[in-house]
Length: 426
Image (cartoon, rainbow, N blue to C red; front, side, top):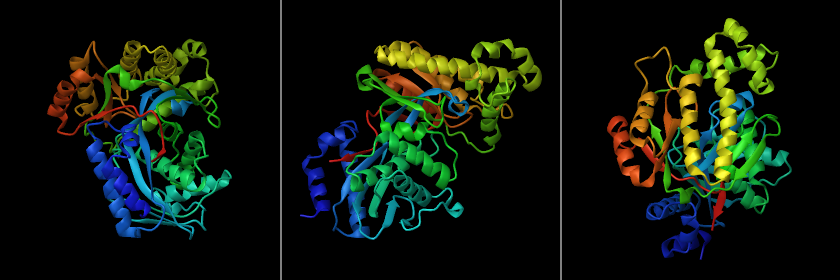
């Protein structure tokens, strides 16, 4: 029996159920099995049934704490989620990668050319080429493969669909050509390299690390070349809560300057001390020079810097709460973080659009519905897009109904924290 038919049989017979239930909920298992069957069908239609076809999964991620701290070399807390990007893949012997994701054109990458190409900036083929270049640069094996895939990681939602794709490609290379011996941390670093040097996006390491390592992780960016990554053991499933990401349907158009101003104003405050980022400035020294910062750069620079110092401290407090299995304290810190983003970092709405505040409206619904039970905060860059809420499972229906009555059907995405990163499913 061919490998692809063996996988089909294992899906149909339930032999893969245990592996799939490590990732997905029992209620979603039938639909997930259909999803994998479909990518196997697509694989066969494109490449035939020959070859040792295998299944792979890489998760999206969510930022838990550390809102707008990484760009000033601060601390963050992130986690992988149970929305993932999956693929069927099989090695080929001609040094060509053919990758087809649902809804996208086929990517064909020749591994004899691993140089960055500005014409490829922003394309998936650049990420594939960059991942292969990073593997080879770090002394690992690479080779061609055929793959078909599909993603549930929402694009533009702050859940890092691009990082999930990068980690998926790295996971395929790891298991097809390196016997799974490349560490998840190394795959994340290679993914950042691919995104920076080949995709043309100067991203930090948080997205890739959360997708690759999995579960809750903290990252300290004090030394950006060697960030300190710590995996935090915590059984989120035992808390009786779900993680909800609410898509407020706000547009990110015309907000580039608003995002850039957050980083710029924090760095302006640091420049008073002849430093490039706030992490290099002692907090007590900062408070002593608030009058000078106000005079040079205005009050918002002071407020955003204040948020940075407090948010860094909150990341440590969140880690401690998880280590102590104290989820109630964890939730209170999450909500405090959200209030700080609103009041001090001021990345919940754009001042030039006072009538456009979908994130503010979503947060107000959270406060009314979840007060005393859950937690809520702006998610990611802010100004538009998504919010995050930790919702008791017995309130999910009420919360979802309240949110979707305002933002539309499908705007409330109910997630779980996934305890591991990129894997082969077998």
